[in-house]
Image: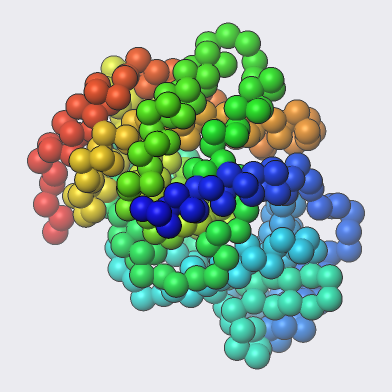
Length: 356
């Protein structure tokens, strides 16, 4: 408990540094050294195409024999800790069952990542499949997703990795500071729902989160970071991962699935039930889960309206999950803590199909 409180305090103290990282973008005009880095550190050659260039450069690599890889590089000093965390997690997950994840490819010298003057990076296998946001999210699919996420958390609990306490704006310890971004919200119901959710979080949830079970978490299992593959549900992009309450992962994933106002939890029931069928929720986790879902939806809205203000040309990409969060928050807004707890308990007590 004391360790969790220390980490909360540390994350809050790191808020300025974490915010500064997302307030800067690398210069997209900087020379693309991807092909040279790939050959120099891995002895590989192939076609390289940049996929994104927001915080780090992400490139798709196609090798002559048809194998697909992902190369991530950065010229920013803080990327060292981020890449150490990401590669350490992927290495630690190898051999785990119940989900799929990328495999980190070691350099020619056997290292998980490479460092040279002015640049660092790593290579991972490319997961083939459909992002969950493009898939048909049937009740069975949501149940499978919840189960896979629980298996991921079980595996992450065994991972010993560097840089779990590096500054991450999405860390729960930063949430109470995110209200500084309220000025960028549109007026009306969105702002009202965000303020109410964050006020509830600060007053009733934050004082209890140190009592939750903490571990290494993915911390961003969004529909863009979960994929439907031939090997089941896969999880990609561990860049926001950190040491945080375990229930965070199910709160984040479930928050993205709140779409149906006719259901108590907006349709997230099956994902929560799937998770709890593998990793049962404690009484405190069940009590706080809906409040955590609302607070994370609010955090997503606050951060992305702020970043859209900083980078208006990229607003469409930055806000790709915002409409879903706004709708989900509007559905959950009517639930107080007691009603939310009752809905979670009802979802997790429903009989689940037996896997064959």
